[in-house]
Image (tube, rainbow over all chains, first blue to last red; front, top):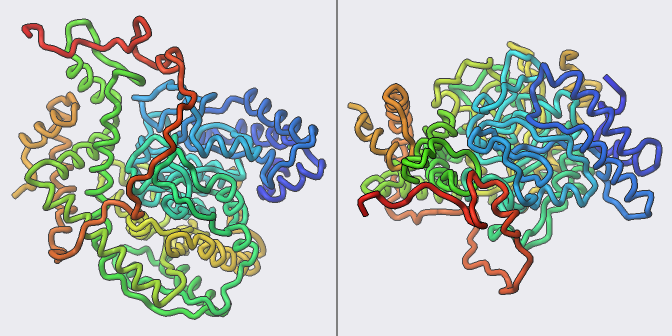
Length: 497
Length: 99
């Protein structure tokens, strides 16, 4: 493994800025790493080496021309295949979009380019971001770099695997029910779900619009903060974007202290279904926060117990509506257009051929929940539960500054284990879903390895809407203390690929 | 008792514009039955006087300025079309033959 690929994004940005290395050299090192390991990891759906080098040389030229560039200029980033990119295919992991070249860039794509980040390629994902293992991709299986027989999490599993395998120092993801935090947790890296509305949804292939939130992956908290800072902020192209100053996440990640901070442990996220090694590492992280000067109390959020069923009504309902756009008429796949069949028949044949099993399940579940006669009992009730969960958070944040829990109830499970058991798969998002329903900020930071399987465990930190800086501040403090204890990052303990 | 019958699942597939085969319908019916039974637990929550939340942010009527802006050319808009003709999307027939 080349030395450049083990560097942090902040270090790479500084090395490029000082002229010690170039964006082109850094890009080449990462392309070499991808060529060496991605056959085994399967993180990427699309890499265009020539295009990557051209992007990198353009950044070097901008700097040579005296342009003022940000701290991540020249740093490579792996981009989830849910963001539209003019110069690369965008599939959202689905056959229905195979080969699609979008006519426009997502706002996040545009901001990555403006900040001088070099987009290495598009990463694998569960089809339309529906899943927790990336097994629902129509294209390939992605493997967890800690154990290639296990899942890398999902839906942003290509992004988490790329960062954990040193194929990229940074990656983008989207988090609708935990799709950034859960893959980060099970691959031993950092992942953040910004406040809903804090990062633009314009140009994201939509899953559930009231929940979808783009966010960063990185190997440390400061790098994640730098990436979030580079692509977040108000976007007039997204009507749900918040027109307020960005939370100071980079400053918070550098501050990295918790003295006097009030930390609430969510009482409901423990007990049955939680792997012993996950519970043990979580308990130690809570003790650590106390030893660092935080005031820890237990907090009850009784309605969190209803978050999972409410989510699996709300998200599929929104998906059933959003995915109606895949009608075989304007873009994407068209099947069975023989001149005799009607538009409706072609539409139904195309959707049956182009969507995978999980997407079909969710479209039908959402259609059911929204159908007349069931609407009040299902979708309406789920929306009321959403209010109750918001109230639980509000009450909790009157007593504490942040809430903590394990990010996921278990470590990475074996590939195939839950593939045909949707309810078991859905449980992977048990602890992450409440923050999507309410829109608040949350982050997952590695907190050790489970004794029984030696796999990474994530600590989830949650803060109120627009208090993203708090999750970075606490995450960085935990990371600093644990790395002192371990003598380096957790990822250094991962096996060589 | 099952939460959803196979006939209801077949109806949902039609509403969802999914032309599913018998095997696929059988498989989906069993899984949807299990999922619906699980999510039906929201009905146990007492929430009679609780207002619904449809969205995390209390935003209403976000407008942009009413200005003409550059947009896609017809060629760009049609570039990914499964079929195009005379600068238009060509689609299968939308009316029944006898109409």
